[in-house]
Length: 402
Image 1 (cartoon, rainbow, N blue to C red):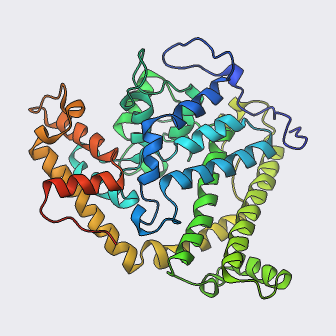
Image 2: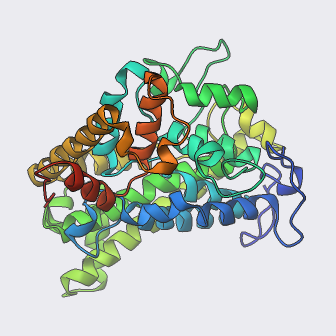
Image 3: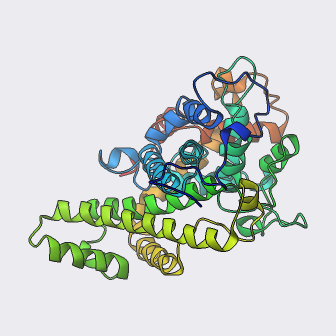
């Protein structure tokens, strides 16, 4: 890998000039390459705008400073560009994948996803990665010549496979899909435009996946401290964070709490990014990839944490899980949020006439599968705020979610 100050392209980077193209052929842009064009289309999509009012951990009206899906996404994109630049990868593709990675999340974050998954149990369940694919290939209705955003093959591949292959060479589902199989929308789309579900995605997609981990480890610590779910002394029990806190204390004795928190989060992001860059260098030196195709065919990801940082990442998540994600206050709000989603699903299934005109148009209400999918798509696209407004419209009592 020849990289000088992050400016020279690595031989295994994705090349927009060699993109496998789009499902629907379009003239090339005179001012933007294929991956930059994908970034711009994602940013201008309705689904991207809705992320501003979708839960990360805390429901949007709990406080102005907590992360939303949108601010989380922007932080992931910043980290992804930093790592891609250092590794000589395509920054635009890494950014596009970071920008799109959470488009499929329903209102109320993972609580909304759990509720929709239960509602759709008889129809394959709900998966936010599959939903993101459906949004960018079908559900966005903006362009005259096609549905969806008509993104490049590399962006669609990375959106689906950023966490690794979905199938083994024998066609059996692997990883998170080993138990229940790959979601039907992903299989269906891959028959139209083969996403090679048995290989790894590009190095840029792998960067986006690690950037997601880095961003939410860091900002969930920040948000958890702001919400008084735990203290800096509590999280100092995590070795990596404790080490950072000791260093900050030695360098800046008597620093006020707010600055201490920011410096801790900042240092954590920096250490994790530097670890990914160093570990990718080691893996590339062993694999010696000569092209993006070599990355896809590799037996393991070329971008990842070192063993020590993998443990630190597990330690952070192990700390946050009981003290934040499963905290009584958060769980109470999320339980109410799940109830809102289930109520809405039951209502629209029983009364499809209450769907907006653009959602009920052309719907055969006697086709249960089609009605179920239409209702799920409508609810999945809702923001937290809109879901609560719709619930109040159709039910006598709506939880306040505080």
